[in-house]
Length: 204
Image (tube, rainbow, N blue to C red; front, side, top):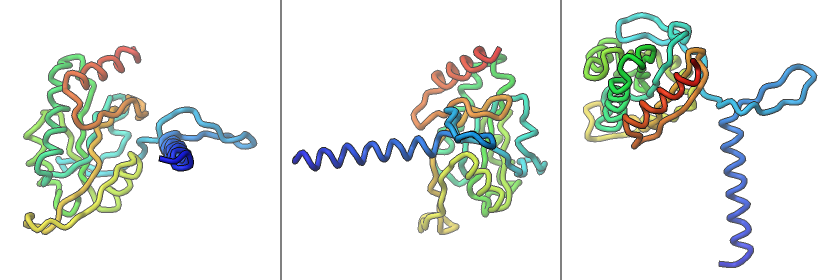
């Protein structure tokens, strides 16, 4: 490999790292001041969706609670159930220490995930799990606020002829709605519970 090729690879890596930093760090600025990064992850924000009980809910309804949020869909064959089971197991491990943590599933498939479908689905997991769905526009707004990727893709094996491709991340949000931590695929319930317990302890 030539020195020029190595140099270009290094430059490309630096550019990619810079792009990630720009996307994840939220700049704050006051009038007359230069914009500066505070190191705050640009994840989370306002949303208005409908719960599996038919109640319209916004982020304000979760004020004062920690939230474990996952974006998925009820027709998901394996990834979504796995992550929801991990969330449920982590809350079981926490026991009373996790009583102020609300698990939330936000659908990225509003076409199929009606209120009724969500109600039938969430009972398979944690008893406190809240299922949220809405119009395509409401779902898109919520996904955008949490930097979630999703896309409908053709699937001949599905009765609906499509499935949903999406990012698989669990977000831990604080009582003030601020982002605390994210958990990627493969995170164990024990590690998730330990991280949540540490966040609660740090805030107390």
